[in-house]
Structure formats: C-alpha cells, structure tokens
Length: 631
Image (tube, rainbow, N blue to C red; front, side, top):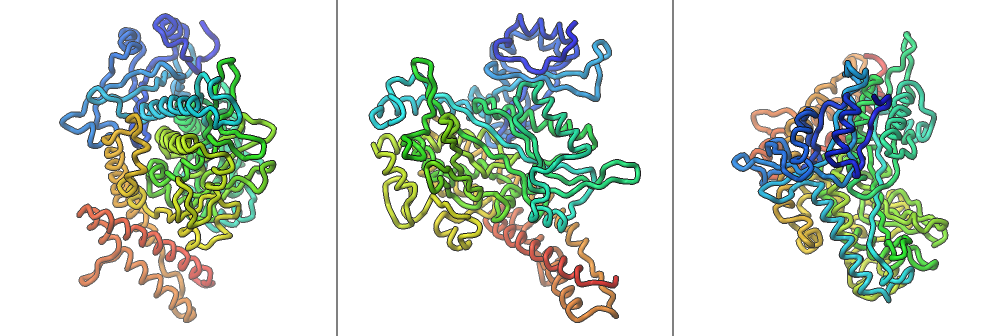
C-alpha cells in the first residue's frame, strides 16, 4: 500500500484503467465531486461515493451526463423551475485535485478522507451554459482568429514571420490577496489606517499562527504541483497581540499568495482550489479568512490581479511572445492592438469583473486599486513603467522577451475569474483585428494609444485619453479623470447598464457565439438579483446595527457647545438614514420601496447616496468621540 498521499490526477490518467488502479492504491479517497462553475462563479459540489463512480466510470468519462437540479446553480432565465435539469459533463483535459478532509481520518490507512474534484461543464437543453464553457470557447476563438490574422498579415509583423506560426498559446496568472483575522475580532480602523499610511506591514516578517498557516498553505500548494512563487504580507494590517496564555489574538493582517502561470482554464481552476485550500488551512489554525474585495472601510481591499499573455508556437518548435515588437518600441503591433482592445472595450468587460456592491467599494482613489480606464507604458522603452495607479499595466522585462504581458488590476478574489479572463481575450482580439487589418505601424499605433482628448485616429474614442505616466490618484482631479478617462460606475446597476448602453461594443463578446444573448441576459439577471438581495438583506441590516451603535457619550453638564452641536448633526443623519416618522420616509425605507417596485435606477441612486451619508456619519462620529474626555 502506498505510504504517500495522492494530490493530483493529471490528464493522461483520466482513463478507466488508471483511475481504477489509483482508487485501489489510495483507499482513503472515498468520494468524487463534479465542479461546474455557474455565472456567479460558484462551484458545485456533491459527494459521489467512489464505488458508485467506478460502477459507472465509462458513463462519467464518455460524456454521459450526471444530472443536477438547476435551482442549485445561478443560471436565471435558463434553468427555470419548470425546466431545471442541468447535465454535468466531465472535463478530462485538465488537472483533477484531491481535496482532503483533515478532520476526518480513514480507519484503514490513517490518512485524511479525500475527494477527487473533477471540473465539469454544465449543459441545459443540450447547450453549454457555464463559466468554464465560456472560457473554453473564448480561448479557442482567440487562438484561431489571431492565427488567421497573423498568417494573412505576415508582412505587418516585425518580430517573426507569420507564415512560420503553427499555433497560438495562451498563458495567464493570478495574484490572490486576502485578509486574515482571529474570530469575532473587530477591525481597529484608526490603527489599521495609520499602519497602512506608514507602510508598517507591507512585506514585513510574519509571526505566530499566521506564519504557520501561510507556510502550511505554500507547502500544500507545492504538493499539489501548483508551483507557489511566494506568500507575503500586503499593505493592510496591524501587529497581533499576545494574551496572558502566550497565544496570539487580535490578528488582523492582509496577505498575498502567488503561483506559477498556466493556460487560462487551468489558472482559473487552480484559483478556485487555492481559495478553498487557504480557507481550510487557516481555519485549522484558528484563523478566519475573507476574500471580500473591501472587508474593512478606509483600509486597502483585496485585489486579484490577472496577468494575460499570448505566445506563438512556430513550426520549428520555438516559441515567441506575440506582444513584443522592435527594440525601439514597448510593444509590437499585435501588443499595441491587444492593449487598445482592452481599453476601448472595458465598459462591457467591467460588468463581468466588478459585479458586486463590495467590488465597486474597493475601486477608490488612494488604495492602489484602479479608478478609471487608463494604462501606462513608461517614459522610456528601456525602463518599463510600474505605475500602480492604472487599470492595465504593461509587464515587461527587457532581458526576457517571453515575460511581456498585461496585468489587469481591477479584479478581486470574488471576481468570476473564468468570465473575467474570457472577456479580456475577446476584447484583445478586437484590438488585434484593428491593428493588423488597418496595416498600421508600431509608431502609428503607439501614437493612437497616446492620443490626447479630441484627437481622432480610427479606433479609440475621440473624446477620451487612454495613457498616462502620471499618478492617476494625485495628479488629476476627479473632474479631470472623469473627462479624460471616463466616469467610473458607482453602483452595480450603473455598471451592468453598460451591457445595454454599449450595444456596439457588446458585439465583440458574441463573436463565434462565445457569449450568447441568453447567457448575457442570464448574467444580468443574476447580478441584479444578487445586488438586490445583498442590499436589502445584508447591507441595510449591517448599517442599521452600525447606526444604532452610534450613541451620545457626552455628559450634558460637562459638554461643550461643539459637543452638543456635533451630536445634534449626527443624530439628524441617523434619523434621515434609518428612522421613519409620520411625515417622513427614511433613506432605508425609500431604498426598500424602490427595490420592491423594481425601480432599480432609483434604488441605485439612493444606494450611492446611502454610501456617501454613511461615510459622512462615520467621520463625524469619529471626530465627536475624539473630543469627549468625560463619559
């Protein structure tokens, strides 16, 4: 019997003979679970005993569907109550991981009970309707269309001969940030803000249970052959405290984990598995983790930057980076086109990237999160930019041509990475089509990318700018940013509306039916439904509790005039937000009524007003409490 544990089953082992042997050699693996990804980005899970799996193994491997109820996945408008059957088709062309339950030990082997996680596609009415299927279709479309464009426009490319290209290959990577804390501890906002401004935590030494959990996570990732590259502290956090028993408490730290790039589908599957691995590992050390994009107000949120690359495999076996150009340029014409495609079409990408109330709260000036559609290349070709205030960064190493890629900085850990990657490659394809079919040189494309407001070139919009080497947060006013780079959506509704307002741009996602109309409509319905439920059932409840916690703490006979005045103003905002009277409806009530009436535009406007007033209330109450000495 094997003394080691099995962590991954590679593609070449996805056959009856090898699977029967593996399950015989590793009897601690008791279950199989098919993981389909719905439009929310949620993964399905069910426990199929391995004996049932083996009994029907040929059905599983040959595409004979396992069925599930459509009510368990987010596919509104597709899997309805009167037509809810969803078929799950095994994906044999990816890695299968074994998820171990360290809390349950197999009596025979004395090892944790394992479950094989098998990625799957979700089918309804004979058609694929899941996020993994969309990404697979986007990958295929990008590779085939770009190969065709290169072969037809070989004379326009400086780095290689298009006729020598055999195929296009894609690679992506993700950087995953998350907050970790001890259970029930509340954030000390002032301490967190001060620590962030002083950069006391960024890349500092990790101690205590957080260190143990992070190191165990990285070791586990290595066992799964996920090739972890690093784990480190991020900008947010405060120093933990020791209690009287010598244990750490009041843990409040932000971390990041990075791992090696892979093909887009595998990168996305890896991200899903790693998130679960992090949560369970840290929990075993008595620590809670959150992947919310903005879990703590006024402190840095969690990002998940996605790196996007593309290579050409030549007929002689060599590989070249298709984004590179001549030594005098940051990029080649394919690279410039890809970047321009991302920038021009971001309004219809963004709904698939920032689809929650929480995600848009992260995108505020000053927190290293992008606030407008702009890129940076650098002031000199030999010194590529590392401007962290832009939406899309060019990652380039002059000593390594294979490293050239784009970093999309807006996604967060709860972004559906499959859909975000799919829309990114479809947008890049649109820009590459323009760059090659227009026969424009690298110099001409760079000039268009660097255009000033009012200049017109043919692809990028006349009234916008798309490149800046400045600090976007500090060197522009909000009015200037909105004018030059476009106004960022402040609510989920404002964001999702772009799928209706930008019909022409939306067509780029429909090439080869990558995003069918019914998928886009289902996604819109699911986003609005989630926003509506989250706003009325979570956000308003949390704000109600917060508002109730703001109490008068001054002693009337010792209070100064400004104390009384400050509390009077605070109390007026509290009542305006959350307390109805005979002749007045508070903001909470008006939001609930707008939601009930399905007046989502009004509800959106009111939710924006709500966030502004809550922020004002917090600041006013903070100033009020700091002026009270006796209470």
